[in-house]
Image (tube, rainbow, N blue to C red; front, side, top):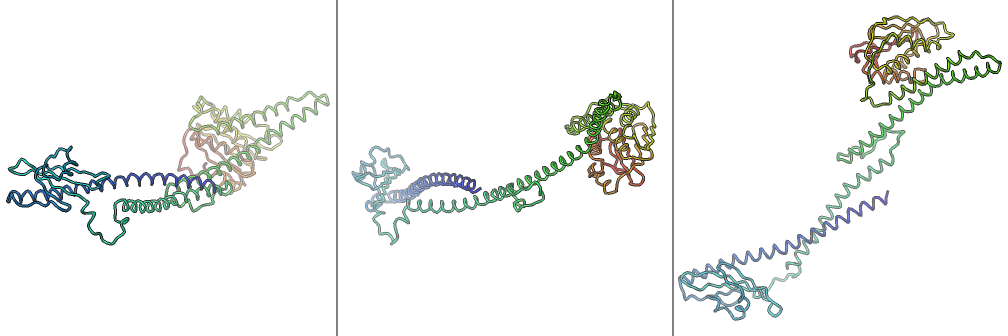
Length: 447
């Protein structure tokens, strides 16, 4: 954790120093050039004012004297310039109103500024000359030179800018990195078994807070998925326990009869076939409910009464040894376009539940148009379990398990209508309508 922090902070600081260095160099060069550009423009304007003044005097009084000492001088014609100055500007054409600059050399560091101004009624130009050597020799106030000269001022400004930018950048780095560190701490302390645990970073108003909330919500979804998977495996093991036990028992009976020379094993083979079919249907149901619900099962012609009779006949072995009477009623002429496999799985699970949980009395199965109703006088279940079935389609340890969970998923995917009424005293009644989606006005308990 500390290593990652130092690397990230190092990268931020490295990029920061490079960026600040480039900015300071570029802006220092710009400031330096802007200073001399401004100085040249100011000097040009000042010399234009002087030239206009001297030209106006000469126009009024041609013999009026011109200043030719100190830092400023005025001359009429190039030939009247001092010889050294003529040498400095001999290769430069003197255009009207244009200022020429001589930057000096090793022998003469003095800089000269010269402006050519046209005179009325004269073929010569008025040349205004200015040198900064006289300005340098003027007495200065008692201040430290490194503070007021140009390089010193630029250097001081650059240092102050670096300090200010670095301070602001440090605050920015802290604002950016600290939430990232908190997010990393949150990720390290997330507990799949305690998904409700909250963290302070989740209240952050920036994108980091959004990431934290997304991470927290993802953990909750993973927790819910694991809980559903755990419950699903528990229910699947419960549903498979009965057919596996039947197969094991039948194999033991076959082995015992064979050891005694008894070859009458057809009844046990029939039990094995039924158990195998039950496990096959369960496996197929698990695969179907695990598929993408956006890929519906292909519909085909289905006779509900025929499927109900076949399923009841296949599951009749569950009523052996019980005092239970089964009544089948319905029309054989009704045929629908349905997903046949899913229809058979739903009816098989519902009829199986009725057969398994009814020890005495009767089971009535009726088919009316698109509706199949299954009513039994079995043990039913308590209101608490009914609430769980209504909410999730599953129950805890009461044998309804994966069967009703599969029914709930298939009914929801196919938009069939399913209702359930149960009472621990009078049994259970289920109704499934294969034609209409769920109705909000139905008064029965629905999934």
